Image 1 (cartoon, one colour):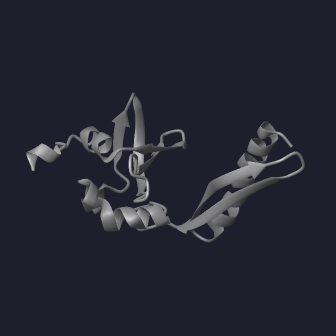
Image 2: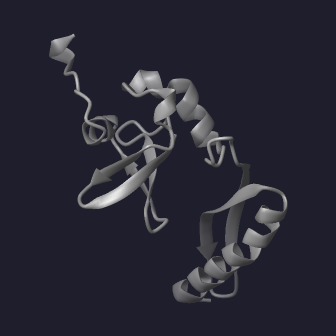
Length: 133
């Protein structure tokens, strides 16, 4: 099996799993994938959808609990910001990612990571330097 076939299978599997997710009021997201010459292994995650319409993934829950540690607010989850001419929506926080802990989804569905400073600037907030404290 090659990379293109593995990607095609993953894309079709997400489409098929959307019907299951809709039936149970969840969101489905493709996780990591690997393949070799004879098989492909793809992970999927199902998450409840919160009242605000955001999938309540582990990263979204972490954002709500720890956003203040990065200069952000729990209410910033789901906010849109612009970077390099694209619009992104804040979807979560990975506290183990030292350099780029903020997770966001671009308008085409691709996921990206950002520094907290990048997101704060894009949201129009002042970024404090350590020397400013």
